[in-house]
Image 1 (cartoon, rainbow, N blue to C red):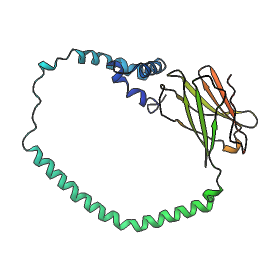
Image 2 (cartoon, one colour; image 1 turned 90 degrees about the horizontal axis):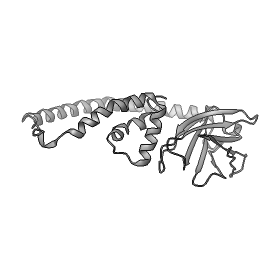
Image 3 (cartoon, rainbow, N blue to C red; image 1 turned 45 degrees about the horizontal axis):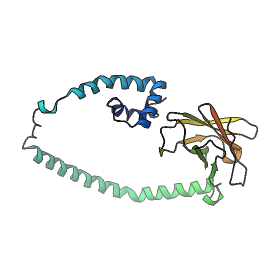
Image 4 (cartoon, rainbow, N blue to C red; image 1 turned 90 degrees about the vertical axis):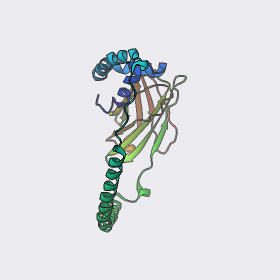
Length: 231
């Protein structure tokens, strides 16, 4: 798991070791730590510091040191210098705006010629999973891209920390991975953005493996609704 994947969890480690997380966030974070050695090591490193903070006595701390009297003048001079530099940069930027605008217009024209007009591109397709367990909801959408498809997924009602793996199915039944994410906790508003090399017309179903369960929503061309088959 990359550092970017763990960002949301590492932001909560301080609150975890200080006991400031709610029950659902705490359960989800602890579930992530069980499977991530890097985050677990960072939490272990923070734990002793949390213990020291609890023993700190504010009554024994000294007064907050006052800034030196010349600091305000120094900051004002620095701000004035930065403003003069910014004005010079704006003057140079203004000289290049005409050329930049011409280049941008040419790029748009080339994109239109080689990619076709927006009306010629297929629209995004939304899939609502049906027949799910009580309290569970899954929605997904396919957005056409030059390289294939963007896959947006929104789930609700799984156990906090559940790993969700998403795949697309071809006409021949082959499953093509689209990525994975971890369901954080109930009420989470994150909508994972995944991707696949398959174009939307090639996709016959979207599948999500959540823990030991698999949910499949068939996609029928020119049809808005679809079903779901848990297994």
